[in-house]
Amino acid sequence: MAADDLNASVAPQEGHRYLLKSSGFGRHLAATAASFALVTALLWGAIRSGVLPGEAHLADPDSTIIATKARLASRPGGESIAFVGDSSCLINIDIPTLRQQGIAAVNLGTLSYLGIDSFGLLARRFCEGRPGAEIVLVVHPECLRLTEPSVEHRAILESALESHGAPISGGGWNRFQRETFDGFRTRMLDRWIPTPLRGRMGERYGFTQDLGASLVSTGGTMEETAVFDAAAPHGSAEYRLARRIRPECEAFRSRLPDGVRVRVIISPVPSSHALKSHEATVTQLGREVSRWIQADESAGAMPLVMPDSDFGTVTHLLPSAARTYSGILARKILEK
Image (cartoon, rainbow, N blue to C red; front, side):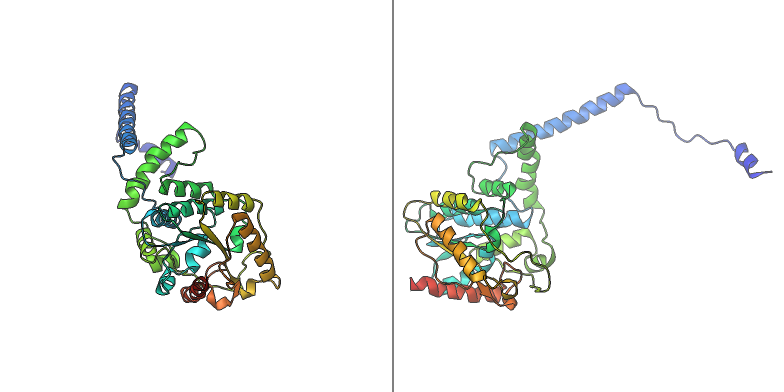
């Protein structure tokens, strides 16, 4: 018997038969939709009524850093000097070193994605209830040539400061989605489920909650965990001022109360990355920023170029170098 004849002689056996009725399917679909709508309405009502806690901002390291700095800026304390700025401020300004020299300060440095105007929001919050407060703006040349700040990071900062929220693009559904589903995640899930950090940052800090706790304990200073590689590409070493810098500096100053002293520090770069004209160029950039921000005086002649061995990245000093750099800064402050 041929194989085809054998296969043809075996009749397929019927196992199961499914009979779907449209009326039953419709009832189940309607019940599912109604349950979803009920849960969504209850969630929206809980968030709008204030029953749920505020947003934790612990989903990622950027949100954690921004929210923790908003917390540090808002809490009362004996600090009279606040350092605000990009991640070079966050990493390079070692508050424990300054405090050892008797300087009562806090590090409110965040990320270059925010922009100078956003740094002014933190500075303004710090100045509330602190007559005689001083603000030191610390920015890296990389920050000064960044063309556009991040709207998303700005919204996180505004939310963390409990100020007016940034407009949510796209209309009603996007706003509703953020206030309900995203709101539940940021208010509840981020608190319940620890978010691990990746790579060397994870080895150093573990989870976002641990990063936030460390920032509070150090007065806002974060340690660099990378290792600088001079042979790797690091982008252009030709620095300039983006067009947005002047209006952002003017907005920064307008946020501060009258009489608040402002100083400006331009962060250093590795020697292998610096052009021969780097110090002259960056000094001039600093003068322009100081003029637009109406700085009362500079913070002293801080180093603009340092050895490669002091850096973790082109913008960040290693912890030991940050302590050395901050020791120089402490002496400059005390000389004033």
